[in-house]
Image (cartoon, rainbow, N blue to C red):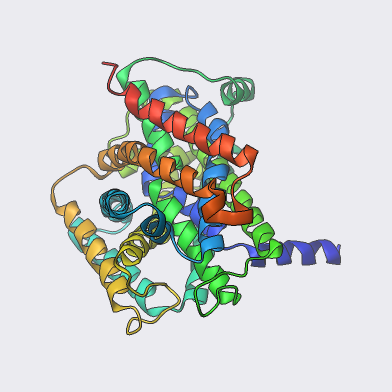
Amino acid sequence: MFSFLTRIKKTGSSLGPGIITGAADDDPSGIATYSQTGAQFGYGQLWTALFLLPLMIAVQEASARIGAVKGKGIAAVVKEHFGKPVLFLVVSLILIANIINLGVDLGAMAAAANLLVPIPFALLTVMFTAVILFLEIYVNYRPYARILKWLSLSLLAYPLTLFVVHQPWGEIIRATFLPHLEFNLPFLFIITGVVGTTISPYMFFWQASEETEEAREEHLINDDGTVSMNHRFMRRLRLDNLIGMIASQIATWSIIVTTATVLHGNGIFDIHSAAEAAAALEPLVSSFGNAGLIAKFIFAAGVIGLGLLAVPVLAGSAAYALSEALGWKYGLDKKLKDAPGFYAIIIIATLIGLSLNFLGVNPIKALIYTAVMNGIVCVPLLFIIGKIAGSQKIMGNYASGLVSKIFVWLTFGVTLVAAVSLLFVR
């Protein structure tokens, strides 16, 4: 028993970028998109959680491997091997996608908090922005990484709800393993959003750069920039990635099941507000006197916790990409005075995102549209990641094997079909 607990503790301590990235994947945008999926189509898109899991694992492993083996982020590798036009495309796409994404995530956090406290929406967004910037800039990397890992526990609310609601398990199991497709714009629009919020551009850049940070912490990156990679680090990377992505998709599956049963099953087919999304968690607390208020608290805590996790990831991955492109010093392991440009990008990107919340857009709808945009943006980025990770010239002995290549390019094909399909349906 003692050795079993020791093994669990050892595995937990080895988790890092993978588990953080997996949890950040279920950010407010993800919660909103999966909730809308369940409310609008019931169990009709439940199969996507299982179908996308191996694709997600393959792409994130490839991204993480690039960062670990090259000792630099994806943008820096693109700069070295593909030239300025491709670099400009990559950095532009990630900046646009991330700034919009973090902006609407901030808005969702404020809308969720507004369920509990009568503080103006604008003030809440500013408060969350200030807290996130303070943590990202002034808290050292290791303690900050531990904070991010603990915030990933916010995802537990939805799996817990599964066990207190009467579920049609036969129907749920069939919907999980048997794909269901409808060739109409609403269905394909949401499924593109599901793909985009599951396989998100910012995740590629964040995990690659964070593996670079991990390699530097373990002194695997030499003074001349070369990397002395070893199989032990690579095993840890793959285990971390596997656990993170599985945990992420369990949460995704749970959100879709919960909202399908509670919302769709009770005639709520469209989510317009944070309060309607929170209603999915009411059965979890129905034994209490005021189930609605407690459900709102749990929902708000989850959205805020995951927002505190995701917004720094979004701003950080944008800063990594642009800093690498410009040749600036970068890294969350560096202090503000050592990497002023890197932290300036974080601050500017976050403030631009904050400003988007004053355009009068419904936060829930904005989150879903952002997920769809991510689904479109990730297509060219996946092509580039596939080329880099599979190149013997770039990756040496750590180039993608056959299985990795198959799943990475399958992911590219799936995202391409999902994006293009929106052009041909009405």
